[in-house]
Image 1 (tube, one colour):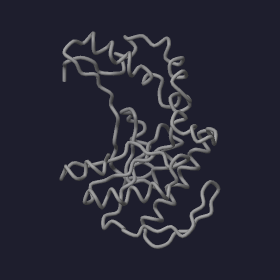
Image 2 (cartoon, rainbow, N blue to C red; image 1 turned 90 degrees about the vertical axis):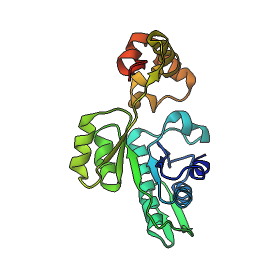
Image 3 (cartoon, rainbow, N blue to C red; image 1 turned 30 degrees about the vertical axis):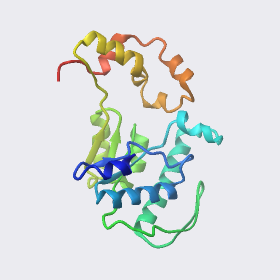
Image 4 (cartoon, rainbow, N blue to C red; image 1 turned 60 degrees about the vertical axis):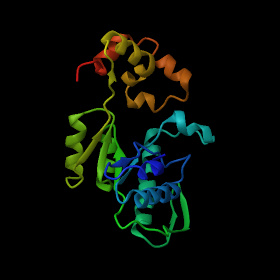
Length: 221
């Protein structure tokens, strides 16, 4: 999809928000896709990476590791991705991945920036030093300050802000409750849920007014 977008746009920035290079997608394959995107877009692409969600990753039958293991996997994946972006052949034998004589044959002139998703102190400490930008699912100033302390040169922060716009606020609140009430549970909960029934159970007591407190709803800009 992003490859198609590169052909009908000229200046807008493009980004994955975010790709998980842990289980379904090997980090070497993710790197190749990112390099292709950078070439197609003429240097407008940022590779957004994250530690993933059980909902998406469990389907390959490898189980769902605890968060500290997922962070280890993501850190190793970023190391592989960075080595491939450096050019030349890459061989890697780590705790979680092996890479055998991999190479980006068409290396973009502009290195692909890496933006990494974080949700707390642990992930900030691990990923700020090896990332070009920060991704968060909420505008949390504590995350920003911690990121700046860990890596003052990685100044860009990219945030997700859910909005339910509509001319009728009550209808917008109802729609947000129907389709996005899981947002109120927080990332640490959402990342662990394996399927729709888990999300339904975790949000069964979330009221429309609870959603309206965390998601702007209605016609007002």
